[in-house]
Length: 286
Image (cartoon, rainbow, N blue to C red; front, side, top):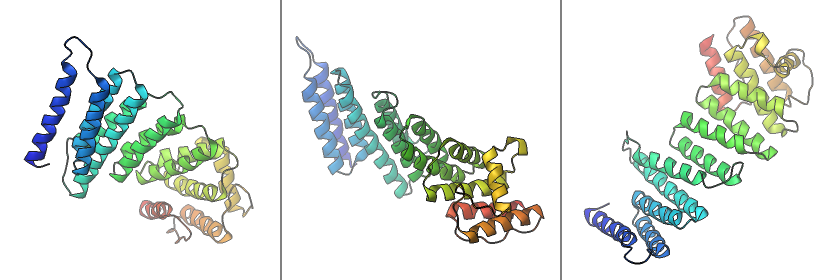
């Protein structure tokens, strides 16, 4: 923000706060102050100054808190969080480093403030946690995003939505090189849910095979479903729990045999990017 714009923002922000503090013989007009903060935020947005817009929305949120309007407070904290995130992404796009992560920390803090205003197991809480995670992924803070993703899943109750996001969590864990946790999550997903859509089931089962070959868990620690999966591949058994084409089944079988014999893993097709990366890891490990 130019010096003039900065001075203008500072002056307007301080003027609104001064009005709130001047009580005299009556209570301050909270509604008026809220509207003025919002107007200032919109002005900053139009001036492409998201960080200042974020501060103005925080001012509006605090006014709503004073008025006892929890939902309004949450709404403006979320608006502030989105502006702070926009400011952080703007810095990243310009390749400016932000070691103290001022805008990012402000955004997360505002999201978490909003989170406290909604009841547990609320879809709005889940939505906020997922939004934080998605922003962190966009900013390449994937390991940090995992925790928020896991919290969101704890509050998620709708089965189909949870299955989709569990698949996404497995992929995120693979991206973060958290292979053991990814395998445990995939195992739990298969053992906890029936009626998983065929495309998701095929992807997760294939990832389970590759993760198991990479992690090499102790035999006693493998769930029965994982043992059965390997048995069905090695014995060419048809099963609804592994709905992949014959060609990929044979290639996975060949992969398992080559690794058992100490040979180089064969090339596999029909894999996602993450699964192909796991095969590359196997090549390096062997």
